[in-house]
Amino acid sequence: MSREAVRIAPPSGLRVNRESSVPVHVQLTSQIRHLIGTGTLKPGMQLPTVRQLAGFLRINRNTAARALADLHRDGYLESQKGRGTFVVDRPPARQGRAARSLERMVNETLDRARRLGFTHDEVLATVAARVPQHGGAGRPRPARALLVECNWEELARYRDELEAELPLTVDRILVEELPTRAVQDPALFRGYRVIVTTFFHVHEVKAVVPAGGPPVVALLSAANISTLLRLTELPQGTAVGLVCTTSTGSQNLLRSIQAAGLDHVDAVLASADDPWSLARMLEKTRIVLCSEQGAARIRGTLPADVELIVSDRTLDRSGLDLLRDMLARDDG
Image 1 (cartoon, helix red, strand yellow):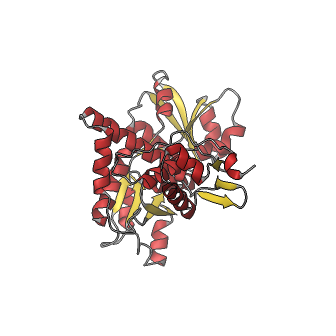
Image 2: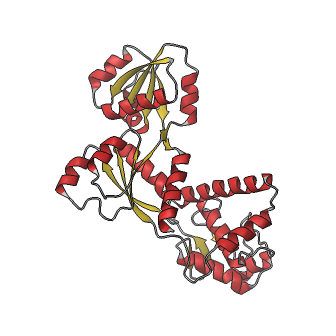
Image 3: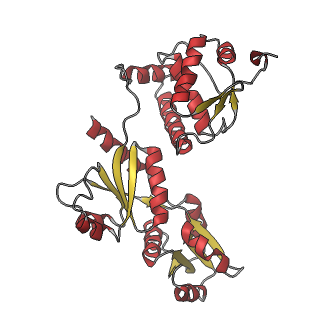
C-alpha cells in the first residue's frame, strides 16, 4: 500500500479564508502552530501529507508544502524518513502559554469588533494591511529584562508569565542580593531594556538602579480568584495563617490580603523555615494560606484537620499591557 493510500485525518479547526488578504500559507502555518501550542496537536502526532492536506483544504500543493516547511524550520514539526511528518516531542518553549495568550487576545479583539459592528473579514483585512511588507519581517527580537523579586518561586513563575506574554528574555535576581551584586558588578544593569519588579519591592529596586539606568517598572501581583473567594467565605474575625518560605514572603501575602480588602480575617504570620513560628500559628488557627513553594515544604507536617489554601499568584494583566505598550513605543 502506498503512503498516500494511508488516510490521516486532518486536524480539526483548520480553515482557509480565500477572501482574506492574509496569504493562505500564513493562515495555515498560524493555525497549525496554534493547534500545537494549545495541545490539540500533541507531541508525536502525525500530520497529513502535503497532498492530503492540499486536497482536504482545496489549496495548491505548493502552498501546503510551504506552510509545513515553515513549521519545520521553526521547530514545530519533524520528518521521519519513510513514515511522514510529526509534531516534535518538545515544541518551542512556553509556546503553549503564549498560544493561549494569543487566542485570548484575538477573541477579545473579535468580540469588541463585533460589538462595534465590524465583521471578522474586516478585522482580518485591517490586520493584514498593518503587517510590514518588507522581507524578513517577523516577530520582534526579544528585549532583555531583569526581574527582581524576594523568592525563587515567584521569580520562576513571573519569568514564565513575562516571556509568554511579552517579547522579553528575562534574567532573575533576588531583591536581597541586588545591592551587593550592583556594587560588585558596576555593569550589572547594562544591556537591559527594563527592570521589572512588583509594587512590594519597587522602592528597594529604584534605590539601587543608578541614574541613567534602565527604567524600573512595578507590576501588581494578584492572588488567584479562587483563593480570594474562599477567604471571603470565612466569618468575621477568623484567624488565618499566612505562610511562605521566608518571613518576607509571608509579609507579602499579608499585603496582598490587605490590598484585596479582606480585613475581616485575623492574619497569623509564619515562615516555612521557622518551626517555632509554624507551631505558634497552629495554636491559633486551622486555616492556612500558603504560597506554592511554602505548601510543598509544610504539607506533610500539618495535622489532618488543617485546611491548606494554596495561593498561586499571577501578574495583573493591565500592568502587562502597559509594559507591552512601553516596549512597543521604544521599538517605534
